Image (cartoon, rainbow, N blue to C red; front, side, top):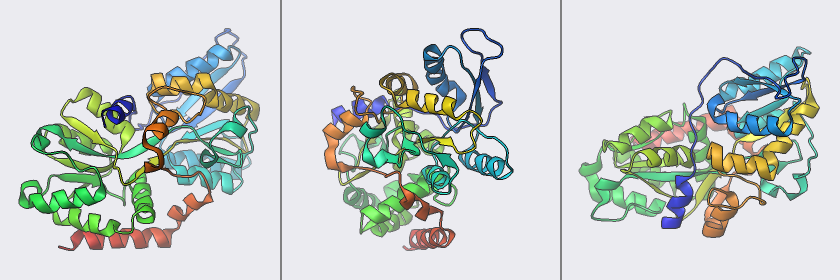
Length: 355
């Protein structure tokens, strides 16, 4: 467990926030240098090390970085393409379903790259959409509240703890509101596929007065100061960032199974400079780029060529079949089916209210 916590302590990311486009001039100083246009949901300050690494290897290229919400990444590419205009050269987003939809609907082009054949099969959809990060869903807990016992390490233990503690923990459990949180909905949908008894977990949380939030920080803040004792299905990169700054926040990778999501990169079909987009994607996938991802962006790397604690390779060696990465495939688009989505949310709300 100590090794697992060390692994997670190196996972860190910040929540996306809208910002003005950032421009990075070519290192060679050529005012007429070609410009790589990036649409991304990753905070621009976090993206800087990757951009700087790319420009060091490509000093003749300038970069325009447009940070936006995940839905906007998708909608901008679709609307610009449908209007016959050029769009971003590279798109990077945590909305796995929307990125795969772009690929499946013909809005992304094939990118045959040096690492394509060696990329994990689950992380590569037809050389058009690539998973570039490895981010688990975890339990978080308030350490001082568990001085006399170990925190739950599986969903069965989670339910048992809530039932045993009863009124002591009522209103002190947090998780994502799956109606407002895209990653929360993704994790819940995967729970339903992986765990036949998941509705017992949801019912137990409802009976314990679970509080729902659309952001990770709202839950983690309350775990850090002791208002909450537990958080369920929290994105590990955010949790580890908080744990590194707040010693009372503990992290557990559930031992029954741990869902892993990824941020996906692709080159849009209507890219103004598709070769620049492919150069950036190739750098993202290279040993150098993935090392920057793990060490400087502090988001776990996917590449099998990169070693170290903050990598899929090391976590897989430690945890094996416990890890359940979400495959990059059209199966993700099931989560965009509005009828199925509404049905899952309705059952979620109904079971939460069942006492």
